[in-house]
Length: 46
Image (cartoon, rainbow, N blue to C red; front, side, top):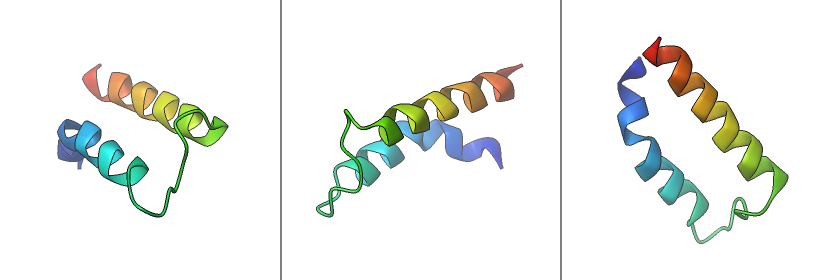
């Protein structure tokens, strides 16, 4: 289940650069999402 974390940056790039403009990098959602992933990744590492 944790294998996806190594693809995190590619997934984020694909998600946020999609033509639909799902989330702006300055948006609160983007910052919260990245923060969540960072905490999750740290949790997996421990």
